[in-house]
Image (cartoon, rainbow, N blue to C red):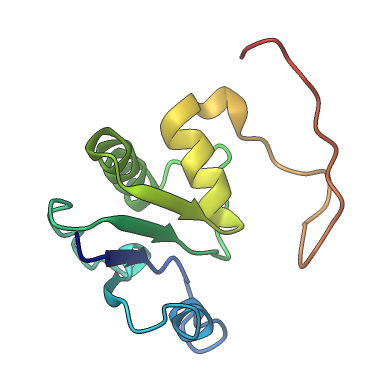
Length: 127
């Protein structure tokens, strides 16, 4: 199967942050489509895509009631059900956790997390 990538570009202010431009250099000629879900662009049908990339955002998935976040989480669940390979970056990790495991798995950090930070992994024995 020929790889085909869908990118959820979650930037709220494309004049300050352009994640698709940053990620494009890693696509190595792979055909892709990008949609700006927070700006109201519709999510396309997922069939025919092999991969999904969920970019960072100035938004937070923790405790948000934004309709676009709920719609995107639904699409991420559908992508997982279809067997797409999914990568979430920053906000994308939050959204992936929200979509797959629910809101109890997404919390705000005590202070904003920007850039690279150390993380500690705990075995929970199931969530």
